Amino acid sequence: MSVFATLVERLAELLQPLFATSATAAAIIVFTALVRLAVHPLSRAAARGAKARTRLAPQVAALRKKHGKDPERLKQATLELYAKEKTSPLSGCLPSLLQLPAFFLMYHLFSNSRIGGEPNSLLDHSLFAAPLGGRWTDALADGGVFGGAGLVYLGLFVIVAAVATFNYRRTKSQMAAAPVADGEQVPGMGAMLKVMPLMSFATLVTVAVVPLAAALYVVTSTTWSAVERVFLYRDMPVAGALTPAG
Picture 1: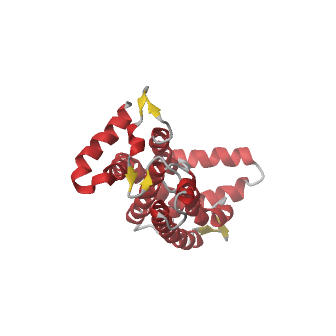
Picture 2: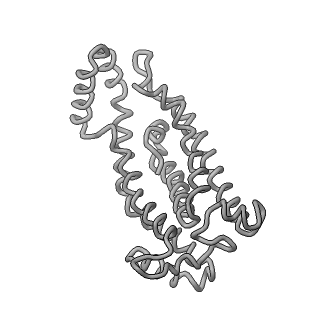
Picture 3: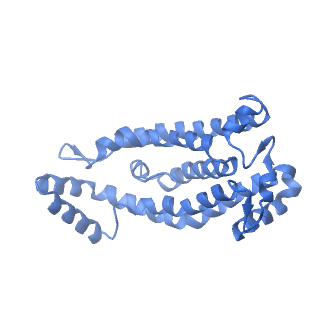
């Protein structure tokens, strides 16, 4: 069995006295928290970068006005400005990207009947009545929306919807308060205003289609992100909206 699977099993063994048959599900939540703790320094760095980008927004808008007819010159001047301030327009993406391997490992682990040439015993575990290797469609086929497994998914959907609504309202207000220079918003802000507030709701689709174990990872990580962003961007009402959620 893979090192990753062994780690989940060891965590489950430690949590067994507290969570009984749901110990593996609890281990996944703990594992997710450990991943988020590992990338937290990068999240803090991304927050500092977002604050720098917000501070530079008027200068970026001025460059856009000056070089609007020369896209290549505008791109070069913008990159030079960011380099001078030792930041990057893409620095906020790094924490999210580094979490993807952990998500795909979780997806792989609970989507295969055999791991490392051995039977995948983790598929025998569940969260209450919902198997960790099952999907929402399986829950609907076995008891329906209000069956034992269906209720587990309803609980996850409620959590995701609550977090998404919180992110939607917060992001919408932040984007509306985005800095304006010479009567013009930061470049690309118009499109972001329309798309960013809705991105959190995409998590509902993910939870519905991936194995329950991967869904637990996503729900835990999304909730962590919402709390973390409130903390990291508490003194900057705009910056948090300019950094992708993890």
